[in-house]
Amino acid sequence: MYSISNKISITKKASVTKSTFINDEALPSAITTFTCCSCGHENTIEIKPYESGFPIFKLYNEDKVISKSELLKHGIVNETSQRMLHFGELTVNDQPTLYFGTDCTSCHSKYIGVFSYGEKQPGLTTLSISGIWKYEELK
Image (cartoon, helix red, strand yellow):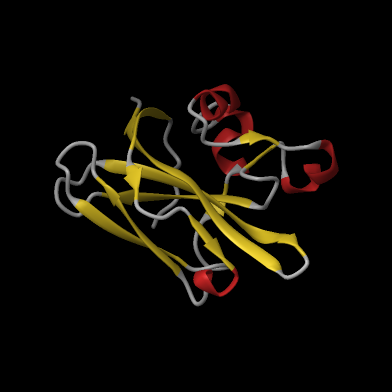
């Protein structure tokens, strides 16, 4: 997993086998797979709560990497409800939202994954993967 600092363009959404992990399913990590849009290879990703990912704000802040409108258009995030704005303007399920970059281990296509992790209600902690999208760096 790596952070993304160059401008990107989202191209396709990859198929993810499991995207929601509840309570202990996410501990010590949430492990799932996604299928590469280019070569069909099945890639494994492991998300460790409180260790994996980078704040989603870093992507859309001043449109440095990608604009808010692009993130919303592709269904990567949603606008945060007023009562949860302390998590940022854009989130997944009104929870703290993070992203990561990853590559297909076979053809090295570049992907961005977005997920949220937090307590939905007392006793219910969820890790929700919004999705994994293929992207291209813009020059």
